Length: 154
Image (cartoon, rainbow, N blue to C red; front, side, top):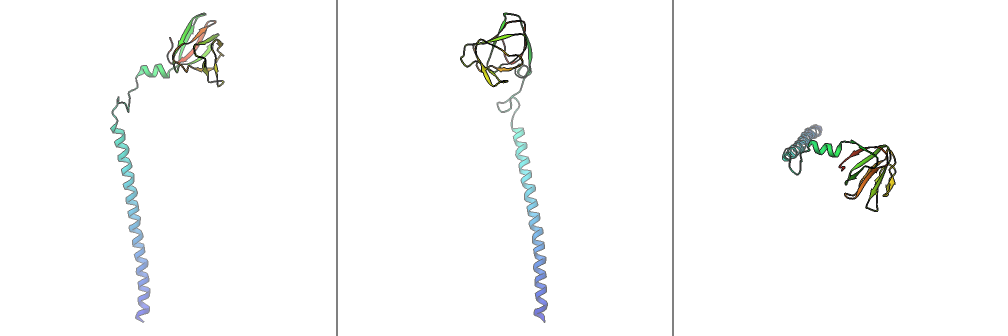
């Protein structure tokens, strides 16, 4: 009879032991998750505070930089007047007629139609043009003209 009584007690001990073991494993997993999250937070905070403002890795953006590179400006040209375009200048002809002149055989990129306009071409109204070269590109007004531009004009 002792053998019959001891078997159920052993099975209860094993079942009870596995429940305790599962709780310990669960606590270990929770601890590891919290530890990993804390390590990620520490890494991110170190990255944020490591960069000094104004350094090469975190440059200071000035008002003049934003005005010159990210602000659209209106430019009026009288008939016969011209302006020079520089690398990266964006232009939209809003009114009037103007012709693109360039020294490069590739022309100027017309992003609206996805083609290049060659030198001597009349600029279509309301097309976004971007200058891919730094020298020798200009726009000449055939009539009084209004241009919307972003970037350097001279």
